[in-house]
Structure formats: C-alpha cells, structure tokens
Image (cartoon, rainbow, N blue to C red; front, side, top):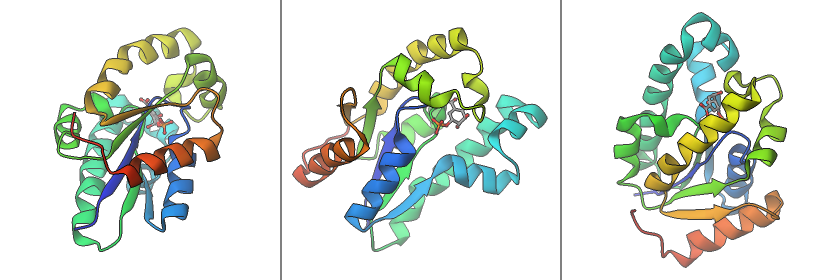
Amino acid sequence: MAVSLIITGFMGSGKTTVARELAGSLGWRFRDADDEAERRMGMTIREAFERIGEKGFREVEEEVVMGLLDEPAQQSEGTVIALGGGAVTSDRIRRRLADEPLVIFIDVDVDTAYDRAADGTRPLAADRQQFEQLFRQRQELYRSVAARVVESRGLDVNALGERIREIVEEGDVDNP
Ligand code: S3P
C-alpha cells in the first residue's frame, strides 16, 4: 500500500509550496486540500466564506481531506498532501491523522506567516489581531497530530523540503 506524506501547519507556513516541491523530488503525487475544496465547491475559499460561511466551508473541507487521506490506499505510488491550515480543527480529521505515520508540522513564526498569508485570498488573514490569536490557538492542535515538527525559521523552501525528505528517508517517524 502506498504511503502519504501529510503536511500541516498554519497559513503561510509554506505547506503547498514545500509539498509540491517534495512530490516532484520524490516522484510522488501531489494533492492540495484547498485546491480540491475549491474545485469541489466551484468557487474560491474567499467566495465560500461569503456564501456558505466558514461552517459550510469546513464541512466541504472535512469531506475533501477524508477523501484525500483514503486515496493512497488505492495507489501504488506515494502521495504528498498539503492540508489547509484549519483542517486540524475537525475532530474527525484529527482522529484520522492519528493513524498516519508521516504527518509533518511545519512550524513557522507568526510574522513570517502573516507576511505570506495576508495576500487577500485568505478570509482568516484579513485582520492581524485575529490572525495572531488563531495562530496561538492552533499550535496545540498541530502538535497533537504531528509525528514530527520541522522548524522552518531560517530555511528556504528548498532547505525545508530537504529536511522533510531526510525525515521520510530516515523512516523513523511514529504516530504521536
Ligand atoms: C485556513 C487556511 C487556508 C484555507 C482557508 C482557512 C485556516 O489554507 O483553508 O483560508 O483556517 O487556517 P492554507 O493554510 O493553505 O492557507
């Protein structure tokens, strides 16, 4: 059965960029939960927050992520999955992630995260104070699902990808 490498972390931690890069270098498939959710909804996440609210978006996100986590079982090659930053707020997703050996939390500092995330596409990055509060609240959730934490400070995307690749190749990650 093929494995999944699951990348989690706050908005602006570089999950999507690193996951795409890793998939390329490992020769694995790449899946981005936000992209899949937008495709499923037929609208952007920003539009979804306006039209169906955050709750509506979370319901779609939960279904999409559960589906992505089950996909590799039918594949022969590995998959790198970038989760949306809020996926860990779902109990169902957190319980499912507990079965996965390769969940990597990219730990980022809040200033870097905000600089990257406040690009107008993320409804929860519109207000800095709210962003920082959410950042603090989420830390425990990311740590609770992560098999390994990768500190991203000082690492560019290539170095970060390299660090995660080493972890995968060491093969010494465990369920939390
Ligand atoms: C969110 C993170 C976003 C996206 C949505 C909500 C969050 O994904 O799913 O805007 O609640 O943290 P990224 O972490 O990929 O930006």
